[in-house]
Length: 342
Ligand SMILES: Nc1ncnc2c1ncn2[C@@H]1O[C@H](COP(=O)(O)OP(=O)(O)O)[C@@H](O)[C@H]1O
Ligand SMILES: [Mg+2]
Image (cartoon, rainbow, N blue to C red; front, side, top):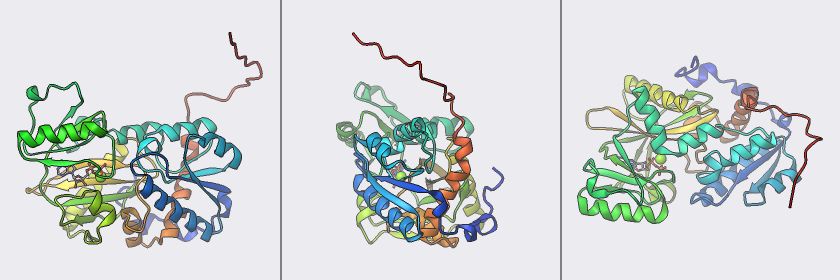
């Protein structure tokens, strides 16, 4: 907690980043099979190029079902995770890496799983008194008639990212259609109170909130098009918030990140209502690292070039390695292992 909200310039050891050779062989994992595959490929290539430029022995792996085999072949000393959404961000790949004893960037298994499950994140924030819009979780078996839906509301998949299949909803008819559409792609739908007001995102690096970015789009909300395709989305940095409000949202974002047990880096999405109150939407544990991405944008504001940021993320994960090693089991002598068949 101690570093939270100190400006990065006071706490960063960026000047000590060096050329990064001591990280050994670094495998950048990207691609995968989630709906964010294309974005992840871009992030991965950019990270890989930065590592090479800094003299790191890096390799790029497009993750498929042969991941374990590939890791056994490549034998990396550590992994840079650039997988967005799906198994790369929900704790599955993190568990594989833990099991194989390979350190990696970012959050561990439990925090990744919690952050990917928006409803679970919100239940934790509710229990801690951190503000997040009122919500319901809906699946195919839910009796929609019996549901006390906040109206207007926002309907989105509980666990898919990047604003795929998300809808603002203003009446009951639209609601039923929106739920049906999301259920075509996802098992669980999150129905949230609609927040009407500006949207912010707060990058977190090593537990500290970076300068806040305000997002402005001509689309109804910050949808897939606005995120990755449109050049008309405006990113305001500085955010335009008063110093007091900027500090408030940074503290809130850092608490939200910490409350899920997230580590290393991430990005917290927050909206502000007409009364100026902030509302937590979600934590992203492996945010985008493309040329449109927001964490690199915020990091630049405190003096990190893209290459600096990539090396800093490796440094942060290396510092956390000893903590990550606290696993519920210890390696034991297994020469007496047997496999019984028949
Ligand atoms: N409760 C809400 N009220 C208004 N807009 C919302 C709400 N929840 C999400 N949105 C809009 O949808 C976008 C995507 O939602 P988010 O929860 O961040 O999921 P993801 O980024 O994983 O798709 C947000 O950036 C915001 O523009
Ligand atoms: Mg989001």
